[in-house]
Length: 344
Image (tube, rainbow, N blue to C red):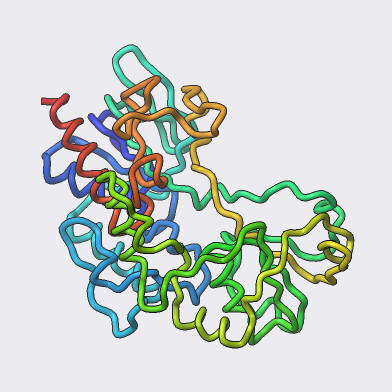
């Protein structure tokens, strides 16, 4: 592994690849470090039935369209194959598996400490996403529950829950998709959330979420067109038609054998937490960039405290739709153009 480059990109998933594309095109000296053993980013660690929210035509990184797929909403393996081919096509300088342990500030740059040595750089672009930092809310009695608890990040399919009573906690896309996945396997599935389900119209897909984000970026009224955020994928519509997506209120507390909702005790064998993620930024702890909000203050995708440290692909705080395949290219392009100007 090289010991000095101008720019180190931490993370070789979709955000890291989008940055790599623009860094390569600009001719900037860079290195991408990825903790995974193979290409595909977080898509490698999802459950088999997971589907993209948009068609292939609207799920592409910059420079290379995602190949067509016969299904309107391509399966996860199609995304993994696309990302693998993408990094080969552009011959991106990726080292893997490399785990970044810490990043230190130097007078003339940054030192990236990994399990395979140290790399010095003038800038660091963080593109580690959120998948390795799942969030589970604190619920009274959760530690006493004797059944199985797992986050959607560790869900690998419905067969392990055959014949069981399962609660899926979370009213977003993941919660709805996991519930739909379990319907024909579990004895009973309860979808639980503190907020109501907000479906997009059935003929609307994830591309429209990107359009909404673009409208927000342009300071237009994106909410005038659509007010939902759950994409009605085919398997979700089937589950909804079966009545499997009738929402229950959030747990008041958990017990050894289930959960209390109002005056009812819900008997459970397992709870699947589809409650989102936090930015995977533990490797930056020595820089002290996080605020009380749990994320760094950023301006133009760069840390306000240390502008040499950049962030791409974490969600709206790093640019509208920046956590999506189609959306991450926009912020990657703008950031690389700015760094190119400073390096030259």
